[in-house]
Image (tube, rainbow, N blue to C red; front, top):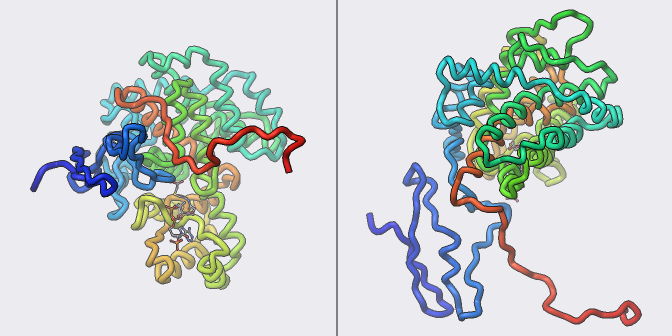
Length: 436
Ligand code: CMC
């Protein structure tokens, strides 16, 4: 092999430049040049220098990260090196959250302390309840979550100390602990039901189910299969490297705002139907299709560009999303408790037809994480509106891991992309009476 450099000839000037190529962990993935090295390529002294133009960051690495590895061609997803299927099989959500944030699996003692600290930060200030009360009964829970998680920053002014490791740790406990409480309160508000306070005797996922579904009983007993299924769903959502909401978290966090405000921004990014809102959109789509017989007609509409097949396609995966595979397996276990969700048959038929159709095969469109998750959530009794909120709970440790990694990376600065200006050249102001 030759030198690890790239030689560029600028045909405008005939000059040649040599720029270094750097690598990540794998020589076959992550080889990059620094965009800044292009700036020396200029036609004159006044020239600003060459920029790389990359709308939507299709081929730009914005950071170095050790949290998550994805090989979209082969359908591989690993957190800190551990394959997602092993974590889904053997870990818990809180243990995986620890792994994402600390880089290593915890020892028994570390795990015990971690779980204790998160369990003991689940309460929210009573004033937050008044805040939630102010929302309309049909307010989307994701809108409530964006508002209330941002509002938490005003309750914890010390959270501004983002460069203090102890403060950071405290806000990490609080955010992972309080997201389910905010989500459950938002849900109960939409039903006009009294809020159910956290129960520290239950697991993270068991407590969340309790805060959602507890009625008049003294103690809510979650079904162990559903509790485990929800925990695994949270594990599958922990992180997904530089996706839209992680990028929002890093970008907003790079201004050194407190993490509650940055998580509010990440939640807002997740809310959109092309990101975490897709699970909700899948369910609405399946309901609209209505029966297996209508699937071919719907596929025709997708191919005519009149609709999107929600839950299909991914910027990175050009193969089956490994999370979707695991979710399909969980669905079977959940349905043994809840009964089969009839929408599953429509989803399976839609997947079967799509995977055989040239339109989808050519574009390498496969089911993504959102395709089957909504069907499970529905079977478990979650209302459709809350699906993106479930995604947000699972993704919170990932956002925090990305945020912390960004803060500790000496190469990172406030995020500030360049642009290629296409507007008007300089011109003189025209007084109102002279304008046509
Ligand atoms: N249904 C129909 N056609 C599609 C779909 C789809 N779901 N996704 C992509 N395509 C087509 C697209 O029209 C384009 O065709 P052409 O090249 O002929 O113009 C081609 O496939 C490539 O798509 P793209 O839009 O350039 O791909 P992207 O990387 O910009 O978009 C995506 C990725 C996830 C936004 C897109 O696939 C999509 O809109 N999917 C539906 C929404 C969805 O399920 N989102 C959840 C993503 S996974 C969880 C998460 O990260 O939040």
